[in-house]
Length: 94
Length: 412
Image (cartoon, rainbow over all chains, first blue to last red; front, side, top):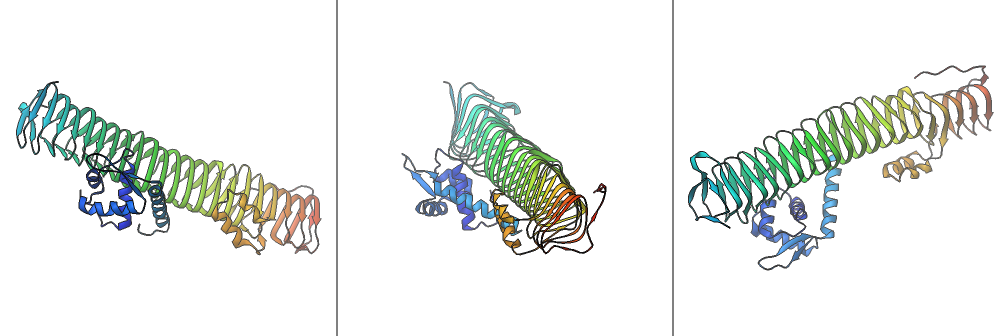
């Protein structure tokens, strides 16, 4: 599906984490790419970054890794949406 | 169990499959004689699935492709599609789990989860829906709960339980809800009602809004009446018509309405209405402005505040210390109001009460009460009393106070 406007890196990170949050059992990179709407090769770079920042974690599985969100990732999401709320209050484009 | 296989790239005409259906990549399924295809067991698709008919099965699974159907899809169990689902007709299933986007004319389910957007042209009916990206429903929604991050546009309807929105929600029709929690933007049509609204961001209502509890941190514009049991505002609230808060309102920041009626009123910041009727206590700190007056059982005006408009109560205390604002649940806007008011004289206009205490270095225009206490340094233009007048040192009264046999009954 085509996305409407180009998303910033933070918005992409938030989208990745939001999609992963919907799968408490863990989510593979391919299925994650369908939800986020980003090709796997580009998504893998962002997922690796999020894992290195401690916002996502990898669960080793036979036949491919599954990813899950960490408490720090949940904290990021809470802060991200709170900032969106502030921007909405001030009438800023968020 | 009986199994029917459709080879890769094949165009198969089917009617009824008693057992399971396994379909190869890029195959297409058509109904014999234009009739629906019925599979009693599960349908498994390698890669993309194309159904050129109405399709009914126990389950649909596509672990690495998309599902596209030209007709209706009815599934007794679960639809599990890794990529996207695009159904021209309606989808009916117990569970729907789609990795990407989901698009249908109508959608009905017990439980649904999508990694991507949900776009439904007509109605969306079901239990719990979790989505990310976008939820767009042209018709009404009828859900148990909705949780999404992104942008949702719904035609109205009802979400009986919790509605958890991160991003933006637009309700184009009348929406009833259980507990609405929004982080971002929320735009409601007139006549929406629910159990609670908890808002961090911006709330717009095109007309009346009715809830048991409203908690707003941010900005709210209601183009009608706000009716609730309890209202808590930390920010800016504009209500075109009246605010009715049967349990009371705590307003920190700036609140403006045509009039207010409620059990209690706690203000830290700015409050403006033509008239305010409070059944219980009103605790005011900041800039309070009423054109027709404020009536309560007991009114406390904190030190440094300015009140424009008459005050009518059984007991009125002017100039009490504002340090107590920290008791207002320690809300930061209330604390900010306290800091701004340090060192300013408390000023009010006319007071009609049974008992009035004008605190030190407070100022009033006209005081009319049975018992009046003017503390040190207070300033009053005129005082009329029926029972008792006590004046501290350094009190300035412009016109000599006078005792009356009976006081007039003030009207707002």
